[in-house]
Length: 589
Image (cartoon, rainbow, N blue to C red; front, side):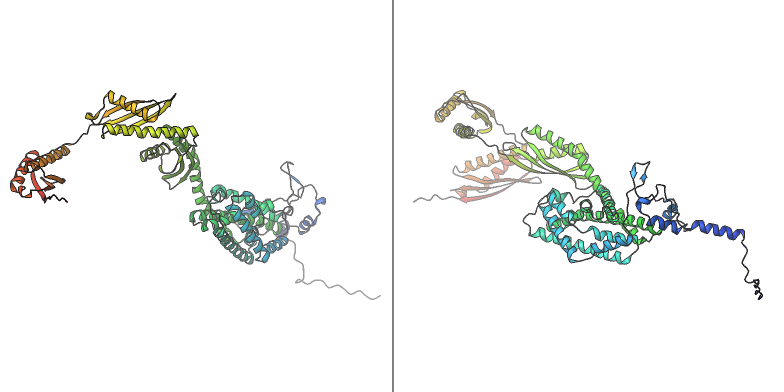
């Protein structure tokens, strides 16, 4: 037998290293840290019906990078199998996320500029704009259903979540282009539309508050769930309504067409809030899905931080708008009650309608209202100032009150019309009778009524003390009115003597005029004084007048000197006379 070849002994260089305690310990740590890929593959490939009921804990890779809270907490993430009960068996886990590659293809297919996208966008703008102008909620909802704006925003979120510059860039360009197309289209539609009225549907989208931010976050969550879940990924009707992107964008164009910049900016703010919140929540959902799939985070930090900062910046004016809106609502009841009680004290038939309250600034409250006032009532400037003063005391702010006063005209019957004609006739006849007694008489108030065929006139009449008529004259007036009217007319008149109270200066001026008239008549009886004026300059009183006479040669120095002496005794200080003498001639044919 041939001898077996001897096996060579390993040299010292080829000897295997001995297992030390340190090397064994390191290998054990490495084995515990690495996730078992076989178990993970089995869980992902396993049919949902064969998934065990026990919890499946997937070990996560230990990351030693400090400062990342999300990564530090990742080892506590526990994935429940589908259809497993959560929260003590109260909830069923029916989450079924769309695969990232499938989701990428779907977002890409729905969010690129194409003929179909443009047709849906323009159609949605037309429907929403006309619905807003017609104040029709149903038509506006129809425009929401066909609006494609959610997918470009989802592409933005996808680009941020997976740090994809191409998705981020194309999504931003598509969103910007869609905004321009939507606003310009709404502007053109409003310009050619015969309806150009700011109604409730439009106003509802021009004054957003912080509540709209929370609504936008909830709508963004709905959009993110709809995009990432298999069960509802293709059922986006309710999602499109919840997102509500198109109506604010159309309101921007409508307000610009109506030259209302403030309302346009308010609608643009609402659209920006909705869009930013959808991008933020979609980003968060896609980051979570990607982390569950690969255990890594690829978020574009700068874009994500910019998104958050934009939302925070928009929250500042939204909080201010909420404060203004809350104050206006709380003040409405106080203002309404105060205005109603004030006008009721003036006229029980008068009312305030369409009261609108808004903050003009931090210190001023603007109130617009319609005042319905009976035709015989008057709302004066003093009444307006008194109402403003009462409102300012009630709400402790300055008030800018704008009232639109409308007279109430009540339809009258045929008998009422005949009675009014009779009253107008009696009022005219009564005024004529008073004038025949004395031209100094003036009617202060008068009321005329009819009872059982007898007419009664109650009146207050101002007259001079020497013109007060006697009872016989009043009785004769009643008889003449009854004879001319054809029915019995009783007169109950109160005559109020009118006294004129004058100041010392007025009294002296009248006395000076009497002196001038007397001196002028003393020189020539046919002389007439006209254009008499008196002026005071320091201690000198100046008289200017014109004397018309047929004997102008009589009015020379002696006349002026005597008149100056008499006026000097009446008035203190110096006297200056400026007299123009005009010669009068009698002409006859």
